[in-house]
Length: 417
Ligand code: DSN
Image (cartoon, rainbow, N blue to C red):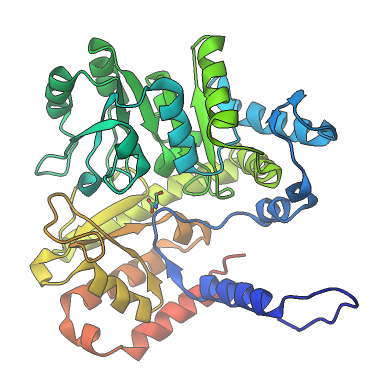
């Protein structure tokens, strides 16, 4: 980036140089982190706009500040578009993140100490679903369900645990589960035991928007999501619901603001609105379909090369590899792949004996490579390179420059913007 001299203004070369380096990193690396994507230029423009200057505590037409005429319009449009793509009648677009959205949900429907049943973190759950490291487990009494040996959700286990603990809330939604979650089954269990059914659909929201993954809104009392994973919008959160009464919706609004947040990030809400509009296009639907096509293609290659998947059911944006057979940890292989400019994250696998800093698995997602339109021919090449590195120690001990060059050329061929 050229250094500009702007009179009387402080120009922060250091930070802008680092931003530029990060852009070059994103351009020149194959990103397989399942929870990331590339937002559009328009989404980024909105996030870098003057809206960041505006305080607008409250909700459209009920603000604590003057000067909210335009931000009111923006928030109303964001809500209207989200209602349309997710077919719901309530949306709160203010949560600053998925974690904030989830905390707001708990804060609105639970009392401190209430019992909540969620998926075990090691089996694909999320930190904010009651991990012992997260405030949620300090505020509420979390119990956990697990996957079975085939990596499937064990609905009988959910039933039994619900019978035993009578949770006030059951949570579904996962960070590393690759199959289809049967929302109806869990919803029926929740109804039987008079529990709220809460779905965190962060990973699959783009697939749901494109109508290629079942929409949990028809079964859950309340749904949260991030807007930056498969949805490919700005970093942020939303809360959705359908067929509830106004007092239920008011409770959620109050829980977000003033319950756990102050002023909304209007620049991010504008970016969310733009992302929702993008999500209505045919191009977006094709993009989401290709995410699944590409992950299935990768899964088949791993299977053919005898690399173990935690679950054979691949119906979303991601898969999880079990590396124990190679005497490799997730930490080791993610570091080595990083040296080849292939970016993945180490990930716990069910009943992992290693801790979350080391892990026995890696998670691989196709949201980003699909966003840059990498075609099946090159997905095949990338996946086989990963397989070679996992299965052959010589590629781990010494970087193979030919592989590295291939990765570099694929990145050049498929620009991120
Ligand atoms: N940390 C995110 C993920 O990678 O799945 C979830 O918030």
